[in-house]
Length: 149
Image (cartoon, rainbow, N blue to C red; front, side, top):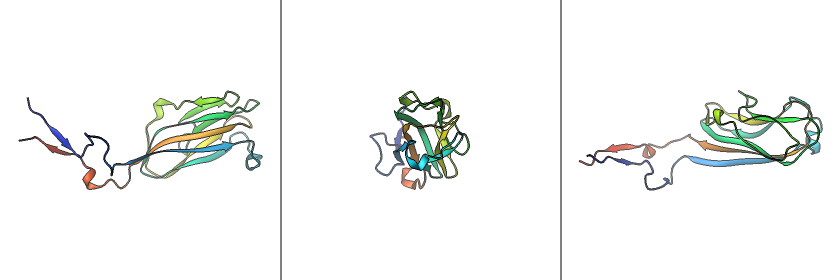
């Protein structure tokens, strides 16, 4: 039986020059005066996503529950609820990402958007995304084959 060795693939850990994976987050307080004119179907561009990035997961946590019937969705310019379908803002806690829509590759720059989906919202929300920058992959990061002969 032959043994094959892969070099450059990070088989002893993560390479120092590998792609960057970051957690981006922003707290949005919908009771803030900046959002006093927020109406149903309005969009807040929360997190910028550069072209050539993959979003591994995204979601939001309701830190302070709101009142009323307003729902919040999380998506982008291509799908307004790509990450979280409309959830009533009166239930505090983490709102899970839709597993069928991630990971998602952005070939063009976009934003992850919090949408006031059905009515006025007045909650405080932490929007987050795990983003992998796949730009500028260097030649020395390529996996090479060595058959150990």
